[in-house]
Amino acid sequence: MAVHLHGLPADIEGINAVAERHGIKVIEDFSQAFGAAIEGRAVGGLGTVGVASLMAGKNLPSAGEGGILVTNDREIRNQAVTLKCFGEKINPNGSYVLSHSTMGWNYRINLLSAVMASQQLFHLDQYNESRRDGAKVLEAILNELDLFHPPKIPEGMTPVYHMYRFRIDPEKAGLSISLDQAREALKQVFMAEGLPLVEFQNQPLAGHDLMQQRVGYGRGCPWSCQNRENMTYSIEDYPGALSAIQDSLVLGYPAQAAIANPEVVDAYAHCFRKVAANSRAFERFARDLPAQAPPWNKPARLF
Ligand SMILES: Cc1ncc(COP(=O)(O)O)c(C=O)c1O
Image 1: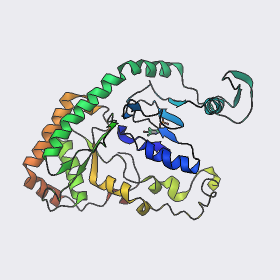
Image 2: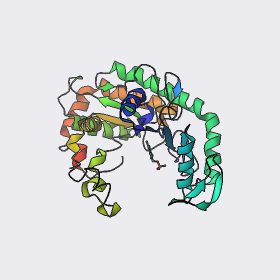
Image 3: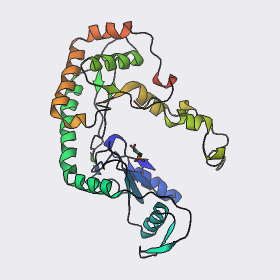
C-alpha cells in the first residue's frame, strides 16, 4: 500500500515496478491527495486499486465519515461491493444477487455524506490551487531563512498540501541548540501568536500500543502468522520516520486548511521572519526551556 502522504504523490512508478516483479497488487491510499498528480496523471488511478477517506478533515470532505474505492478491475470492484454490503453476492456484470455469499460488513456510506463529498468535487481544483498558492508564499520565505527548509517537491509531482510540513535546521542557522529544543521553542513561540505548529505524530506506527502489545485479533494472525512471531516492532528500525518526527513540524493543525487562507499564511510568514530576525533571542529562549526529550519518549499520540 502506497500512501500519498500530506498530499505529495508517492513514487508510485517505482513501487509499481517492484510490485510487478513480485506479482503484488498495489493499493494507493490517496486520502490526503485528492487532485495530486504525477506528470499530470491523478493519483488514486495509478495502481491496481485506489482507496481514500472522505472524513471531514480531508481536502475532499464529506459531512462526516465516508470513503471511496476506485479501480479498473471489475472483479476487485465486485468483491469490494460484496464486503461493503453484508457479503451480498454480485454478478460478474456488477449487479446484485440478493443472497449472501460470504462474511461482510456494513460499510455503506450514508447518502448525505456522499452528496456533500460529490458537491465538494466541483470546488476541489480551486481549493487545491489556493493551497498551492499558500505553499508558494511559504516556500519563498523559508528558502530565505537558514533555520527552515520548505518541503521538497520532486520533478513532475503536483502536490495538494493536505498538510504543510517543513524541516528545521538549527545547525545551519548557527544556533547552539538541539533539534528537540528548537522544535519545542518554535511550537511555543508560534502558539504565543495564535499559530499552531505540531509534530502531528510522535511515534512511527510500530511504537503504538497496538503493535507493542499486539492487542486485538485474539493475539492471533497477523501477529502470529507469515513469520511475524519474532518481529520486535522496534521504533529504531524506522530511522527515516524518527528523523522526520524530530526535525520537522506541521503548520496549521488542528485548524483545517490554514494554508488555503492567505491571511493565515501571511501571519505564519510574519512569524517565521520574526524568529529568524531575532535568532539569538530565540536561541536563548530555546536553551532556557526545561530539558527536552525526543518526541517518541512520550506515549504515542496524534498532535
Ligand atoms: C492517509 C490516510 N489513510 C486512511 C485514513 C483513515 O480514514 P478513515 O478515518 O476515514 O478510515 C486517513 C485519515 O484519517 C488518512 O489520512
